[in-house]
Length: 405
Ligand SMILES: Cc1ncc(COP(=O)(O)O)c(C=O)c1O
Image (cartoon, rainbow, N blue to C red; front, side, top):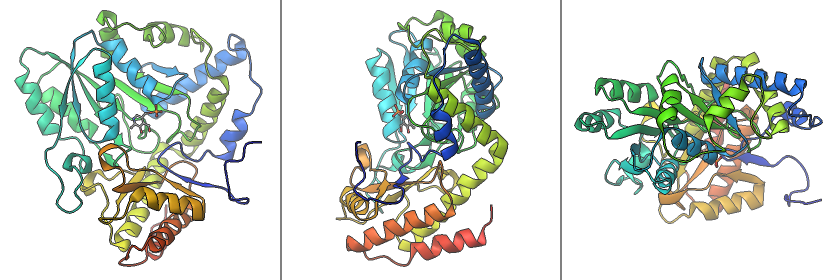
């Protein structure tokens, strides 16, 4: 038996912003016997998970499910709608936006990457990595594009590398105000089922999501929620695609089946996850994440450390980025905390590597696991010699005691 955990007792604290801790109910569902993916029982399962996903995405239109991580669903979104050389407008909100942009280039698309210039005097971090998407800048750029060369606007809903969300409804308003026909594509890989997301109401054409965040599943399946405009764009799009092609998937999904072997056991887990989320009600799920996030932010403020998100209007309900003081290597701190307290925290990615760490507050968590997470961070910070302004543990306990769900 492979032993990954040097701590012999208790559960590991997996407080990274995905994969998130998986609830026991879902673990049990995953362990059911695998069935024939062409048989009648499977068809019923397929139809049920597609229907449940539509409720979570808040859409009436098809949702494609892939046996792939979120990166695959990113590729599917572009490959199904774009032609070689098409121009896509993307916004540098962090590392995931940067990776999606790199992928678009590798697929043979032209990209324009809007970035907020400058660095933050307080933290030294790139300013764009502390804010959400600037919808006015998108509108301005689209207005200049009189010939409609831009075929898609691609934005990240919840930037998992920074802990900053973006106002997707404002991006749709910007596209409409510019009277531009570009498709709106939204990465809500770490937003869905934790942060408010409304596919049809916000006029999103393709949404991309994954299993291992708010849906509380292991990694391995991902999604494209579509709009009629996206499906129509797919008919004329010339980028090569086969495995990712929506047409065959959408057709076979009508009976609850797939053109190839789907991830049967992960779909059992998805079925359970959807039941849990819809039993609780999405509004309650979103409120729970907001409350957890506010508690964690109260702790970070009590320590006297900067929260990476510099705009209170777009704090992430899913994770909080904590900037370490100059000279304190955030990865060395994470290593110390992992070794001493069996607590995993998210690393700083790309341009902010070593300068910050990320606390995930999603998945199978509760008040006490988050108080313990803050305690692990606080002990680690003290052991690393960081002078703290006050106790984050006291602050998060007070917050949770004073604010009921
Ligand atoms: C916002 C965002 N986009 C894309 C990805 C890439 O997804 P995956 O690692 O599942 O391929 C992630 C993964 O964490 C993410 O958080």
